[in-house]
Amino acid sequence: MKTQGATIPKLYDKYRKEIVPAMMKRFNFKSVMQVPHLEKVVINMGVKEGKDDIKILDQIAVELGLISGQKPYVAKAKKSISAFKLREGSPIGLKVTLRRARMYEFLERLFNVAMPRIRDFRGYPDTSFDGNGNYTFGVQEQIIFPEVEFDKIKKTQGMDITFVTSTSSDEEAKELLLLLGMPFKKK
Image (cartoon, rainbow, N blue to C red):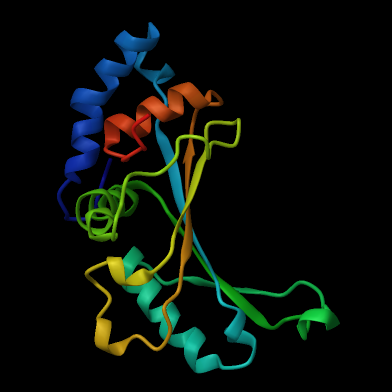
């Protein structure tokens, strides 16, 4: 993994040196290329107040930018829905897609810093796989990330985080996430 003048993220180094051999042994892979890997991490925030107050959307976009390390994409409504007082083209959410070094750096901060700050946290369920090896879970507040200053928050906002893997097997994807450090609920 090439990074421009930066060092290789520790989690990626751990993936190459420890996780790949463990996965090859566990699932009897013959080649390193068969071992599943994370392709991308997608972070979504639905901001319903964005259509009414653009300042809230801008503030949440700044916070998501701090959390992810890159500028978020502003998602707009594709069609008007009168029941929700929504017009076509109104901003309704934010989205960030992380890949390569930024993805691994985000995962390190998520697993080691942010998740331990969640109140009464017992782990995430292992039933949220989609059948194609991808895992999605929700975070209720953005204040669990240390990059967000508590005093400057105008609105607490949740987010959905999706891990997209290269495998189509939920079992292989779960093992990969476990070895990376994802805290699943104990049964």
